[in-house]
Length: 230
Image (cartoon, rainbow, N blue to C red):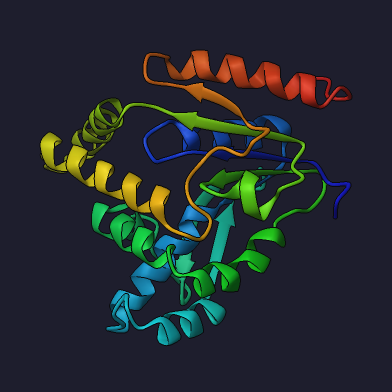
């Protein structure tokens, strides 16, 4: 599958990765992999089965047999995520699930168990891969690697606004603390730490609108894929 183009968008949560990747997948009509979903679903599955995060053997076994399905609208953009044939799209978006996913993602054997499943998404005509180690580990030979970043303060505020729009109560200070803690854990883990690939293009979205980020990345995509006529 090395001839199938891959664009990786890595970085911490709250930088606009999801929106950017959904746009690119729809624009290019490519497949879309949100790797974080795999870890969130795994964290949810472990919670439901009463498996502690320090029980590596049980979590790895769960990862190897995870019954997960991605339902889409035919454009590669995700619509629903199913665990054991039941929709869990909203449940995996909680901060508790995100923190659990971050803890589980630090287990080397869990990452090994899920890496082949992630690489299986590389199918024609191309793949947009959203994650934290897409360009460094999962798709090291990607056609284009982008790393989005933003200050913890800006990312916490964005998350706060998202929750407010959904009618969910949240504390901005708590969100900021959770983001900083998750960043530290993801960046310091010995396996697949959160960091830009050496050949990634880093974009700080702290003071950019989503449209400005889209303009920058769209231009990078056009330059990376000369045959693209969009």
